Length: 235
Image (tube, rainbow, N blue to C red):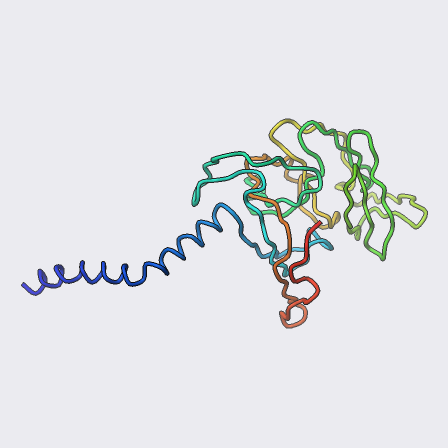
């Protein structure tokens, strides 16, 4: 008898609890739906995109940049854009068995080559300008970014390339990118596991475009916030 009474009272109590907390429940559902299909932020644990993205950055990702997906699924509702050269993309890579943050350096139809850390896309050579070591400004086809070269080939103040025989990842032969794929690399060229190791990345594995840094914590300085990186736009 007591068990029956407990069952009879439990259901109304549960309904009342849901009714009383409905605004909060709706907020949680909408928040997770938004993060699932619209925008999210990710913690960056490695330095493969330095100096553009630093270890400890929390980057904001536009998940509608290329596709609109049904919340909590990988079902694409609509295509919203194309990956462009220079985009910083989030890749849920099956080859790496990990989520990667890399820069798209070549897209479908492009022919790309790397010669001693100098990029060539569709026959055009990147212009590389030395900055404060180990950083260089790389400009190619209207896109510009800062890259790092630390352990292998380097380019002196005269623009002369000094090849290293120790790093085979500093060069690869021309590759034409097929439809549905991109070639992506890290800005920290000597410390990035990217298309040079995993091959071309399918467009279907790209989860969005990184747009900015929400905030950043410096683990080498007691995890204190880096004030100069709050709401920093990524290029």
